[in-house]
Image (cartoon, rainbow, N blue to C red; front, side, top):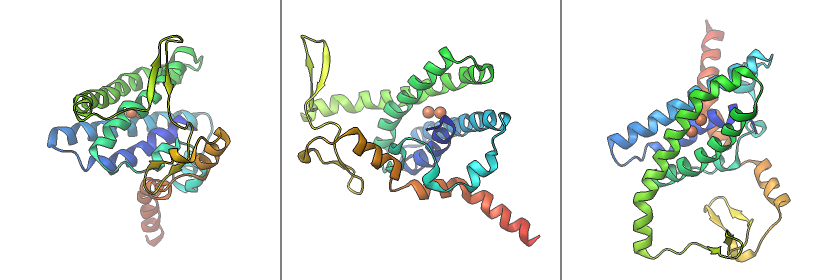
Length: 218
Ligand SMILES: [Fe+2]
Ligand SMILES: [Fe+2]
């Protein structure tokens, strides 16, 4: 998984859901997040280019299944609710990962670039958390139960369902009734890539392909 691919593909993935924002302010926040992600991708690919990588090939010519970003982005976010949960959890995951890099990397250009990325990722995960906070009392009111409990003895949260479990990517449902699977099985699913992989990569590559065609004609 590379941070550059993850940042870039989060743009079409978030756009897929941002279109369903409930009002203009929410839409504005979602678009600002997408713009940030494009900026982060630009920074990350620029670092790769400075290290001698052919980023034109990497971004515009690469086969979708060769992209290395988290499988979760291949499962389309179809509503604003799914977007804010992604902001709360995916951007939190990115923040944790990049925070570790920022604290420990000795590569100056990346360390400096992450100062800006860190501030913007904080905005993304706060955006998700604030919306989730509004929805969570609602869930309590509705009596939703989460399959996890806090174990007092070990002071840890324990998952009460099959984990990890198989996933029906078309219905976006965990197949908990089939019992736990292995992490090797999970890796197979991740490496195969998910339902929106080709669509989102095509989204990113479309403009460049169109331009190349125009230049051919000229
Ligand atoms: Fe980002
Ligand atoms: Fe983000």
